[in-house]
Length: 638
Image (cartoon, rainbow, N blue to C red; front, top):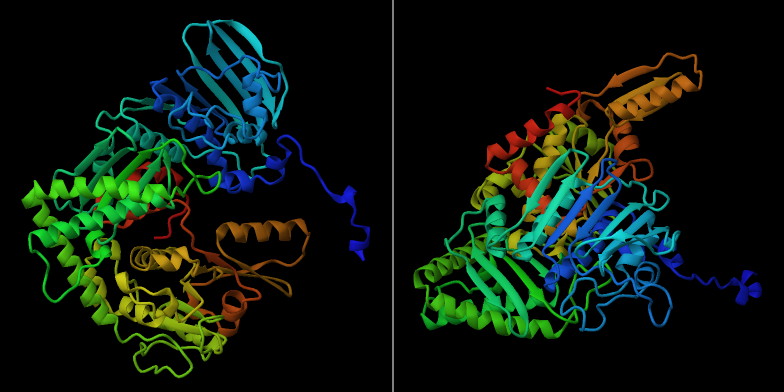
């Protein structure tokens, strides 16, 4: 047995930055696009930390022409270049070659900072094919070069220099990242947000790939940011002037809030300039403060509605807000820093927000009454939705099926585990799917034509739509505030549409509905896209299935390389309905041979904006999208 030879020599000790290169996911969350861009955020956060503490007023980020290397510059104090007393190396080398080295563990150099773990700069260095650090301080310019976490040149003095600052150039290592090209739009959005959070900071983004230069500077800070968010989301504001709170003493906090006619709550939070996409204790404190302040106002002015109980979710429905806090000792969840864990922040933020918001409501009665009317409307809509969904019961072995849609061909499996619901485009395709499926575990729900675009429709209209109502009933979780994942009748919700542009459109409409009204299905990984073939390719006795034109061309190219003497016969399917049930089973339904795409939300902010622009009421956003990308269209399926 292997365990008999298990000795000390089997223990591997990773030194220096080797652990980072061996397990990059532990430090940047993964090696995909999010991990790649996390390198940019780490260096950017260090530059902004200088500005946050009053030592810099300009930050410049340059995406070079190759699209795979970046330089970040600031006019701060410059990284120290004198020798560290313990390591006897320059501070610059220590920062870039040793984990947990930095000036942010003590409060002498930085009052507040985003880079707190002391691993950011060294992790970027470890995962870069090349990194060049240039520092201006003490009247001279210094340079040091690194490769894959190691110094390749000593710190050298280039010459005299005026002013101070730091410039970091790096190129990610292609041996670590499958794709090393950066997304200019993603970087641009992040820089713009940073300029909103730090009033007076000027950030310049130079994109050499498109030869564009953009400067961001927002004198009104979060108020400008809120106006941008509200305008992009399309929800009409309930009141014109937002609630603004700025607190400098003690806990430094900036907050803007505005109630809108949107059906969801939309809060963005930041800690020391770093976005906390997964929230945390500061967001919990904000929600608690909003709820208490509004309830106190309603009770004081005797505005409680009859026949309906207001919930915390009713109060926050339609709220759009930005919260930015600056604290000395933030406790982030992991190096990716997307959630704050400081327990004291909950009561601290609550204690600041509640009295300030309550005071604002009491001194702006007309605005406050409009907000309360919006809240009562949300509560009544929730009650109406609950009444409409009250008869949808959780699936069980003894549950009645009388309330299920007539078009649903359910499976016999009495539990959600292992069960699948295929939402199929059209009755003809539904017929093939019903015949070809595994009746034990696969249910089929055919939908007629293209469903309602829920992004541009009212909630009442969505609830009235027969196709979507059938879908909600079949899934079994309820809708909106009454959603309960425990009542989900199937382990997988699979959208099965034709492999052409019409099918893509129908899939997009369904995904829009799920994203807006059943988002928990996506976040819990329950939504999938089936991948039916568009082509059948017969080469002699062999049969191949191609998902699209590119896949077809690859198969034909491979066939040509093999010197096959048979002429390929290519059949293009007009739709799922013309597939034989057996073929549909083999290519699309059979868990052993099919391909499924899980629908995941990588960036909530970008996803929200894209759906709003492409599916919302504002046609100008779609026109702009089409005009900007017209040259990318190769073959139009019209």
